[in-house]
Length: 474
Image (cartoon, rainbow, N blue to C red; front, side):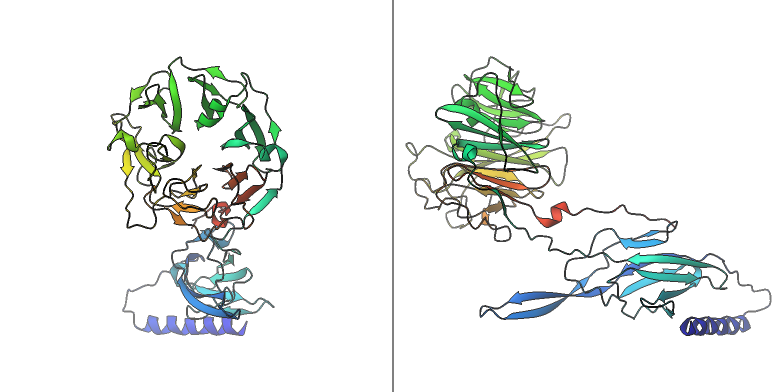
C-alpha cells in the first residue's frame, strides 16, 4: 500500500498548493465518481521466428502500433478488453497503455502475486499475459471502482492455414468424372458422371469422408451434371435442354420449355445461359423469360468449354455483384490460344439499374500472371473479393501442369497469382483427370479429386476467429 499512500499524499499537497492560488469567491467542485473513462494501447513489440537457408533459427523484432485496437469498457461489470485481438507474436509481457480516469482520479494496478498496489504511469510497461486488476479512486478518496483488464492476442497467424486430407481413396468419389461441387446449407453436393450416367452425392460440411448417393427424379444425366448451378438456395440445370430446378438436388421440376444449349453462370438475381444458337442470354425471373446479353468484345472470344464462374458483392455496394467467368474456346477452332478467356460483369439490382454488358479481360502477352489455358478450371469466391482457382493440364499453346498450384485473383480475374500463403496439398495428385473445388458457409475451401478419391479441406484462420460483443458504457 506504500505506493498508493504516497500518491494520495502527493495529491493532497497539490490540492493545498492550488487552493492558495485561488482568489476570494473561487471554489473547487469535486465529483465523487470513480471511473476509468478511456483505455488505449500504444506501440508494442512483436517477435517472429525465422529459418535461414542454412537451417539456423533466428528471431527478429518489429513494432506494431496498436492504438487502432479499440478497448471496450463495461462500467456495470467492471471489465475492459479489446474486441479485436492483437496480432499473433505480440509481446504481452510489456504493454504500454494510456488510461484516463474521470475528473482526474488516481489509478492503481494490483500486483499479480499479492494484494499490493502500484500507481499507474503511462510510461511504464505492464504485464498483460494474464488479466490485470485496475483500481481507480476519486480525488477525495471517497469512491473506488475496480476493473479487470484483459488484453487479447491471437494465438495463431491470421493468414496461415493447413490443408487437411479428410478422406483417402473414397471409391464413390474416385469413380466420378465431370465433377462439380456446390454448398447448400449444411451439405456439400457433388455432381459427376459415371459410365454415361449422372450421379450426385451429399456429405455434411463437417464431414467430407462419408458420401451418400441421392436417388433423383428424374435420373440425372451427363447434361444435367455439367450444367448445374446454385441460385438463392435452389439448384438449376438442364434436362434435354429444358431448365429444371430443385431445392434438394433429388427432386427436379420443370421451369421452362425454352430450348437452352448450356447454363454458364448464376448470381443472386440472374441465370446466364446460351440458347440453341449459342448466343448468351439471361433470365431475371428464375428462367421463365430470357433476354439477350451484351458483350463489349467479339462474341468469338466467349468461352464454350470448361466454363467456371465466381461472384461476390462489391465493396462499394453490397446490393451489387461482380461475376467473373473463365473458360476456353475450342481447340479445333482456336488451336493457338495460350490463355483462358476471362469475362466479367457488374450486376446491379436497385430500381432503375440497367443490365450491364459483359467485359472481356484481355490477356497481355507481356504479363506473366494471365490465366493459363487449361482443362477444367474451377474457381470460387473465397475470403472477401478474392477468387481461388485450380486447373488441369495445359491445352493448346499452354504448358500448364495439372493441379500444380492454387491460384488467387484479387482483382476480378485480371491477374492469377500462385497463392504461396495457402499453397496446395502436398500430396495433391497432378495426374487427376477430374476434380472439383468449392467453398462452404463455414469458410472452408474444398478440393475433391476423382481418380484418387481424396478429399481435402482448408480454411484461413482469421476467417473463423470469433469476436466478442463490444461494450462502451460509462
